[in-house]
Length: 152
Image: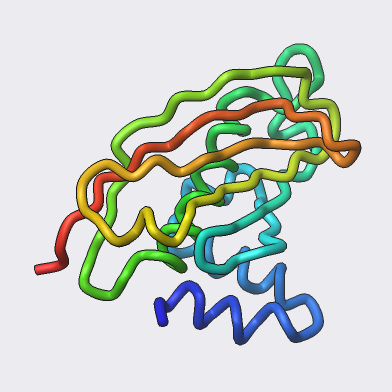
């Protein structure tokens, strides 16, 4: 079991455990701290985090900025990848393609998903990502491509 999945399994069951996990995740990858993510799901092939709607992530329209959304999608993808990658493989992000489909006015839940069989091979691995408002409105969606290779 990966360190990320093990840490999630340990922390999310205790009071304020999701916040503790989220803080520890941002210590390991400090760039993600800019959006103050709150992870709500971390499991193989599925991860979710919430970007709280606050002034620090707003654009000039007062909605969540496009780059903050991408940051959240990449954070969810990173947790998913760490929870899903087989022990004999490694991964690195290769690219991101996203479409902004609605104004992000409110907290945004960033979701990353794969299918178990995708991890059997090597090379390109597309991770489906999307960001949703509480009412289910999709504000961003796309694919983050990973490059998966054998661990040496």
